[in-house]
Length: 171
Image (cartoon, rainbow, N blue to C red; front, side, top):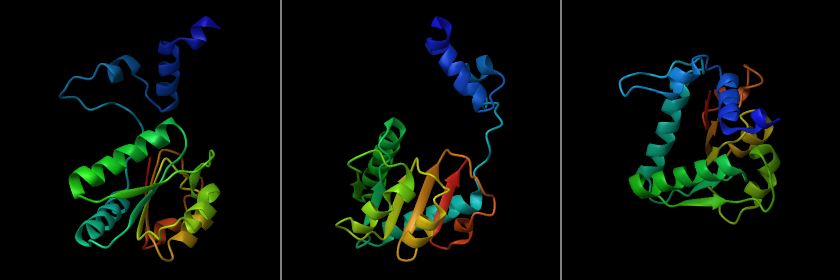
């Protein structure tokens, strides 16, 4: 039991589940090396769409940008990084939508987002499920959405990929 709770074992287990075979090599990266892993590559078409949405927000002063905060450590951290990036690099204030309880993803947070005091032109959803298809499609009717997720896409024919108002960045 002691071995299973050590930090080294936990980190090793996480790295193994992410497909990293050479754990020592991955964690001792030379500045000129690239990590060796089988984590999927980002879809450049979806990344281009996210960049297009971001530039659109930057070029239009009246655009309202929101971030739906997933109420856990990686959700808070990713939301804070996004808000900081938009403020520091694009001079855009981003309004956080912070649920009063743990709601993971747009599916569980749909009503909170729809009823929020501000109507957003661009909604950024970090650490959220790309599989909340119905909620994403409904919200995208009048809002551009960038979903940044580390979860596996359950259905490769996910219709959000074909939506002109949704960008999915996921591994």
